[in-house]
Amino acid sequence: MTQTRFHLIDGGLSTELTRLGADLSGELWTGRVLLEDASLVEQAHRNFAEAGATVVISSSYQLSRQGFEEIGLTASDARTALLNSVAVARRAVAGTQAKVAASVGPFGAVLHDGSEYRGDYEVDQAFLEHFHAERLAVLLEAEPDYLAVETIPNVVEARALAKVLSEVKIPTWVSFTAATEADLWSGEPIAEAAAAVAQLENLIAIGVNCVAPDLVTGLLRNIGTVTDSPKIAYPNGGRVWDSALGEWSGQAPRPVIEYLPEWLDAGAAWIGGCCETSSTDIHTLASVALGDG
Image (cartoon, rainbow, N blue to C red; front, side, top):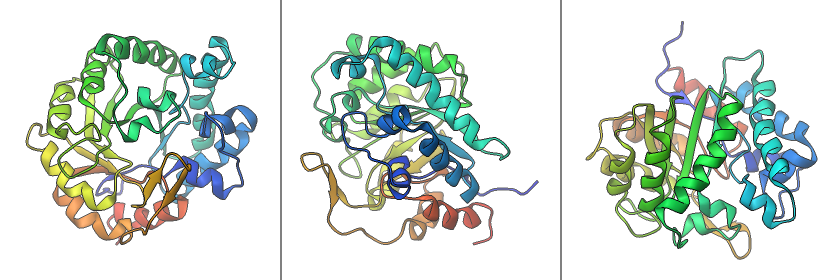
C-alpha cells in the first residue's frame, strides 16, 4: 500500500456545487441543494473522491431542526435531510477508497447571518449542549465513518461539544475558525478552545478550517502548546467573507499548495480545503499527499 504523507480531505462543497450550476441562495446553503437536487450533491462529492480526497464531508453543516422550523419546514424534514446527507455522500464514494465524515457545523450556522465568523451568539453552554446532542443523535444513526466538528468560533461552544462528544465513540476531529494566528473570532485564545476538547478519547485531529491560509501555521502551533494530537487544516481560499452581501471579496494569497511544507512541519496530518477550493485544487494536492510532489 502506498504510504501517504497526510490524509487528504475534500474541498469546499459550496464551491464545487457552484461549479456544477447549483443555486445556493437562501438560508440552507448547500442544504438547499440536498433538498432540491441531491444528485448534484452526490456529483460534487464524487468529484472530490475522484480527485483523490480520502475523506468527503457531508452536506449537513447547516441542517438542524431549529433551522428548518425557522423557515417553515418540520422536525421530520430536518431528520430526513440529516440522514440523507450522509447517505448521499456514501453513494458518491462507492467504489473509491474515500470515507464519509458527517459535518457538524456550529450553532452560528443555524442563525443564517454569518455568526460563525463572529462568534458572538449569546447562548449558554447548556443550550449549546442540547442543540448539538439532538443533531448528533440523528447523524450517528446514519453511521458515518467520522464526525467533522467544524468552524467552531468560541470557547463556550468548544466546552459544550466536549461534553456532548464525551459520550460518542466514532472517530472525530474538531476544527476552529479564527481571526488571527492566536485568537478565535470571539477574541478568545484558540489554545483555550483546543484545551477544552483535547482530552476526548475519540479525537483523531484538532485544528482549523475556513480560515485564511496564511494564518494556519501560527494557529496550529498555538494549538500545539496544549495538545500533541494530530493537527488538521482545511482553510478557505484566503479572501474575506462578507455576510451582508453573501460573497467573498478581496485578493487571494498564494495557492494553498505552497503552504504545505510549513503546515506539515506544524504537525498537520489531515489537510484539505474549505470555501473557494474546488476538486481541481484537491487534485493538485493529491500527488503531494502521495509523496509524488
